[in-house]
Image (cartoon, rainbow over all chains, first blue to last red; front, side, top):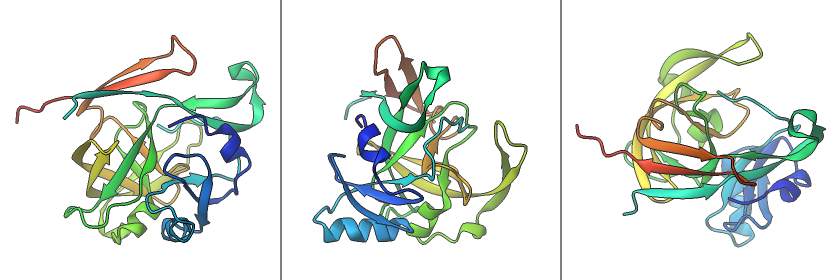
Length: 63
Length: 154
C-alpha cells in the first residue's frame, strides 16, 4: 500500500470506499461493502481494495 | 512460495495536525491486504487493508465483512471487547474464517466480528502473530515491516 493521505482526505466519509487495484483513485462507495464493490465494477474495476472511511480521520489505538 | 515479505507502511490522513507526531497530517500504519472467506473459500471478500496490531488479542473484522460473506453474525460465539480509552464494552461474535494475506498465504483463524469496529480489519496476536514473525522498522520514513510465515509442526 502507499501514501493514501491525499486520496482519502478528499474522499467521501462514513461509507465504504472502493479504490482502484493500484490505489490511485476512488472507484466506488456504498453503505456496505457490496454496494462499494458493485459501483467499482460499474466503473471498470473488478478487483477493488475496499476500506471504511470514518467520519473523522483521527489517531487511534485499535488493540 | 515466498516465506516472507516486506511492506512499507501506508499513509492515512489526519483531519488535524497531530502534536504527538510533530504536527503531521499523515499517520503511517502497517497495513496488509487480506481477503476473508468462509470455511469453504466461496466468494472471498475484496481485498481489505488490515492493521497489523500486536495490541489486539485476536483478529477482528467489522461486521460488514460478515454481511458480505453471508455469515449470520449472531450465530457465532459471543464475547465482549473493551477499548483502550473508553470503558465501554462491545459485543463480538467469533467465527472461523479463512484469510488470504497479500494474495500469498491462506490461514484459518477464529476471528471476532463487531458492528462497532472503527476500521475494517485488524490482524492480532491469536491467529496472526502466532503464525507470522513480524519485524517493525521505524528507522526510516516511511517505516516498513516484514512478516515471515512460521511453519507449524503440528
